[in-house]
Length: 255
Image (cartoon, rainbow, N blue to C red; front, side):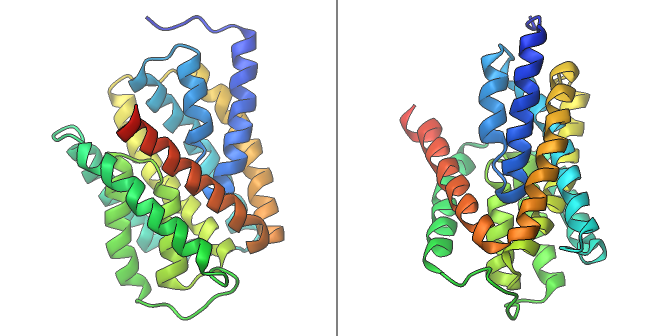
């Protein structure tokens, strides 16, 4: 039984989407803001997750467009990553319906902790473009398939993994890493959203209300990230990764 949403609920969802889109366009983690609100209005877990993917897809699309339009990232440099991410996400969305995600739920907070401390103590990481530690095509083959699979299979922290991997292995500056991450997130989000739509697990009225806010928030956030660069993105990235770790650790180990 789905709840009847009134005007106040739609206003709440719009502003939640705006905040989530703002944060997600800079450092990922918009689901940390959006999902609790979707649960609070009475949506069952599967529908809350599906609705979150719907509204999040609009945010990542808006942010991706802004990063590309303002020249922070080049679309043609991301195509191979998008293809591998799409394949990985399809495999992950299929696999999650066949096997349990228990192992990943326990492993992810540990991996995010590594990303957090590596970024925290590498003071110059992302300040400027440096020499890549592996060829771009190999990077996108490994991480596109791997993180695409992860996002289709489980999901939380995908943006943080993408940004961290691009900083460490491709030597990208923080702005370009954040922009390219949004493109990859959008790709895997669309696959996951398709799975939820097929399963009839999306509340469109709530999703589109949040999407309107997401588009605006993502545009503002990505614009500030492009303008201010690493000094603006880095602290927000670290805060989002830390909060994701805390949330996942609570849900998986303490709750």
